[in-house]
Amino acid sequence: MSHYRIAVFASGEGSNFQNLVNASANGALGGAKVELLVCDKPEAPVVKRARDAGIKVHLFTPKSYTSREEYEHEIVTQLESLDIQLVVLAGYMRLLTSVIVDRYAGRLINIHPSLLPAFPGTNAIGQAMEYGVKMTGATVHLVDGGMDTGPVIAQRSVEINVDDTLKSLTKAIHDIEEKLYPQVVSWFAQGQIVIEGRHITRIDPNK
Ligand code: GRF
Image (tube, rainbow, N blue to C red):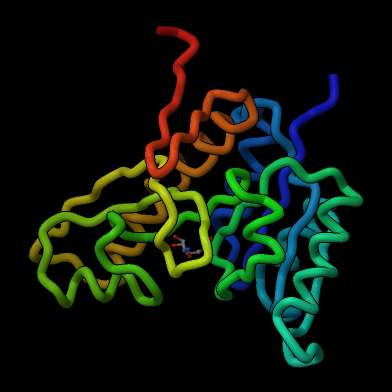
């Protein structure tokens, strides 16, 4: 049986990328397989992770293009040639244009380290600590043209304790992301996600 084909976009460390690759190998990704890493930073640790796992890498340097649309057209060509069904952003530090957002509408997801709509944008974990909220977490959402504004698919919360540091809270959030993202990808792979405007539900086959 042919598998469900995903591409992961990442710019940095790649712990979420690695979790998805591991989950796929362990049969915990609903039959999905990571076919491609798209990365805008040749020196990012995620590139080595992909090479070690034998996954194809599409590397590009934004500075060598005259517009975002130009490099995104090249990415779409690559995604189409691999017949990618779901695009998964995991620490990809660039806003997407309509070239990718429209082409993959409803099949383009991101994970963000806060309970959106609180604390969008960069340094979400630091923003939450600074604000003094007692609870934060992680959100998986569909990507639209805005910064972390797309419809929410799933969220998990984490308590912020008085003795938490940026480091400890970052670790706690990464721990929930490790479970949450593969779970959501498996729901897509198994056709369990229903999108009605901003309202997204999962049909649980066991219920
Ligand atoms: C994660 O915290 C994710 O929520 C955010 O970027 C971070 C990426 O970390 N979008 P990593 O590169 O997966 O380790």
